Image (cartoon, rainbow, N blue to C red; front, top):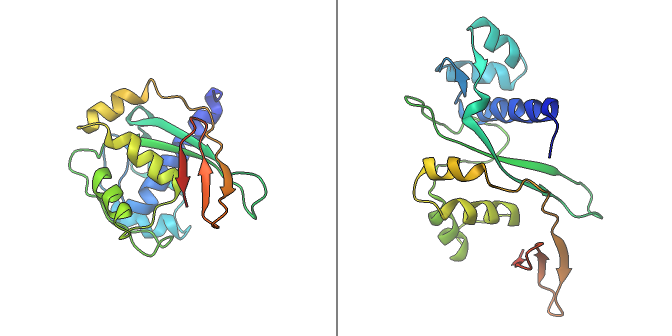
Length: 179
């Protein structure tokens, strides 16, 4: 369980990242300022100043914690990543605006998982697990409601390699995911 200042910082970072990558602002009042996203992403306009200039406040109540994953020790880089869920605000349109990826698209969780199963899409184990958990719900409102009862205890996968060389990770619940 995070303390209040850490929670505020993480939610603020999630809201900023959502804006930088999609142009969607999770603010109060709602605002459509995707045209300023390049300035924020390139550091020409600090995100806090964007909010201040337009009289906006972060709408932390729109964002819910969903999961937390920590990469196994021993790798060249380690991550302690929080995953959040939020509904797209009315009137907002998400776009692939980030320079951090080679492409992005909006896909239903079950379709992304089917693409993975058919080898049409690569998904890292945390992404697959998150998609499986979200796909269990028919509506965004159900996902948001379910977030309140989700454990945010760190998921720490344990890597292993089978005799045939297949790499996998084992999750705390015993699920094994092939890499």
